[in-house]
Length: 149
Image (cartoon, rainbow, N blue to C red):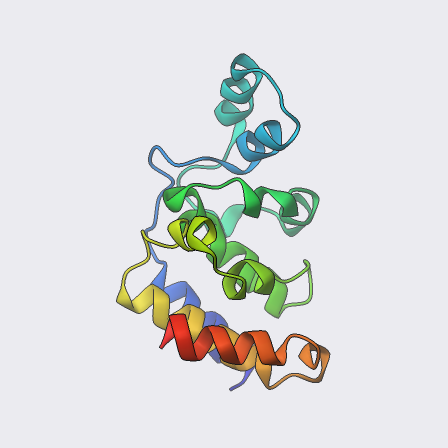
């Protein structure tokens, strides 16, 4: 699949997704940094909540560890931004967070609907076909077979 076609699939599947009351990008960084709740709230006030596509790639890259601290709604909102930016080669990919699925990490994916899960599956399939993912290919295949199918 061509990268542009894959990006279109992701955009369509996650169109109109909002953050709602999910954990935001900078809020998650504050959680990661063990900041007090007042700081977490202040960071949340600066978070994008309406349009995941408007989050700059450099912010996603700077906040890559946020993937560990999102709740299900936060993951649903931010995941397409990370996926699209990774397809473009602008951020480190989120593959680890989509393939190493213990109960906790799988709980962050519970807000995804069928179309969104299919888009993630398409992304992982695309990754598995790329030379850069030789090392991750076994874990991608296992996740596709056991979780994303």
